[in-house]
Image (tube, rainbow, N blue to C red):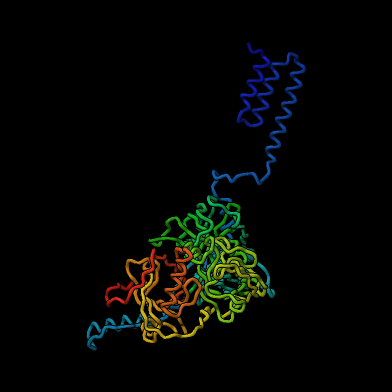
Length: 561
């Protein structure tokens, strides 16, 4: 049989499994009372246990703040109360010029239809004033030249082309704002307002603090605050769905954000028209993103919103406040991503880096000897990959700094040195350096890889609107059942290089295909000039190279443009 002492210990052990320190000490106290026969000893032990319990409670109340989790049962009211006073509405007035009449129906003078269309187009011709609404938030309040000024962050597309900008503060005070600086590459703008026009008791306004978006994780709670549909001080909640999303925004005359921002934060906090420029905050009320875009088939919220991360925005905003513009490094190249097929065709072990499509004449890259077709593997010691994209790495590098650039050129690594220029003072007119070579007239027309290739003649240049000084071979047509037909190559494209080798004649192109097959390559990469734009395409090689004689017209189906 089990004696009393063993039973007490067993019960104590059973009670301690998965239970907090208070239950553990209570269980041990129960064990000591059963085992010890002397009352004075038991009383002393009980007093000691009580003292230990009191100490445990005191220690629990002194828990380090960093270990305390946010209590969702209390809602987000404390965060909202902290953030809302620093968020503003941004209202703009724009003048829209009259539309071009284009082709106007002609009717007999004096008829009802003639009068109707005349009145209609007269109204369309007149400039019109339109208003738009967005959001913003205060990041800095200070004194400049004896004037109290508040600096407000918003999206550039919110205030682009605005004739008048009005900022509405949390207390409904209205102030006319001026543009301190803007950056279309990040779609950010900083406004400034004169607080001295307000009554003295209203001049002290709240500012928001930047958070570190690098510390954000998928699944973190976030709040979006803004002015959707003109409804100010609106707070919505959600979680981060992705922390590095490339959303490939379509080109916009007001913004070139897709050229520079490739790591948007995706979240499902409800944002709609008017939320642009508003903050995305964490549970400490710090700004980790600026709401900029939504994905929506209908124009309304479907739970997919995108914000510019604070890691990029904070630095840009600081430069706009300090200098009125940004100061970024500039290399002078146009680039494309390197695909797996492209890497294989160039003999690169894995897809990485950025391939140079064209150069700015007399830019830093051209002066350093970088060439179209080079793949930039490293820049200033930083490997170029999905997380370290070339445009961002260059832009964040100090202007005027001399850096080493590691390239992949014709199957081997090459190191060049370059001194960065400043993007904002450059022409940024990236044009392809012309490829020089001797002309060898040839009227031969051949078909390779389903591409019908011809020498670039004057008539073909005119037909396909090929810019002057472009040299290469032109794609006349494409076989519909060829692998080239699925890559995006079109009739009228001028092939400048094949696997980094210049081609001026159809036979040279055919030879490069043969050389690639001898090296057991599965793909070949073409540098193409399409009406002045330099683009890389990778085409899969066929099993056998089949030279074909020119076929009768209509035998090969052209690819529709």
